[in-house]
Length: 118
Length: 118
Image 1: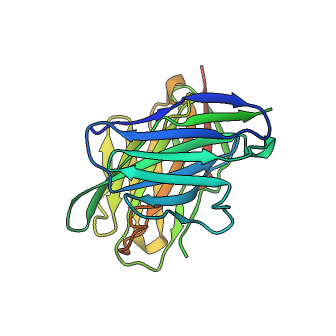
Image 2: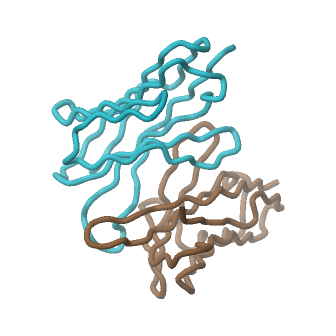
């Protein structure tokens, strides 16, 4: 099956700094990538949808100036948490979509990135 | 708006017991997909099953089985003869069918923490 990687797998940063998380589709081209956030013992919540070559679409309540998403190529999307604060500590998971034809799509999840802001 | 409800927050069973995880969904779409994912302590989501709204056949895969009932908007998951390795968080999810740039985004339930004791 298709593989999606994320880097780093975990990161600790100081409050006020920025952190970049990469999401790569290793063996397929992903026209769309999704970024989810999962707080401890909670569900996954969609943050934004990232389409190659265009601006990301953010879900209600997600600050687009704080969570910068760049989908520069068909295999790479990045999420930058700017001026991170402890409340941004979370598990960030990306998902890449591949269209297999017609109505059908396949979606693959990355392994996640655990961010801790101290 | 779509919604997925997993009413069971936590379930604890003893090994070899059967356990059913409930999932109820709401959607206005007539065409949609339902999913179950397993999230072990490592955090990486493991895909278990995908079912489209036109296929109400129940499915069995080894010790896993799924019961899809469109009439009650439920998609329940049963593990037969549970094992300690089944301990994880299980998520039910719904995917919208509408087109557009957000096509493919998943709405997750709150998750059910399953603990199987030896």
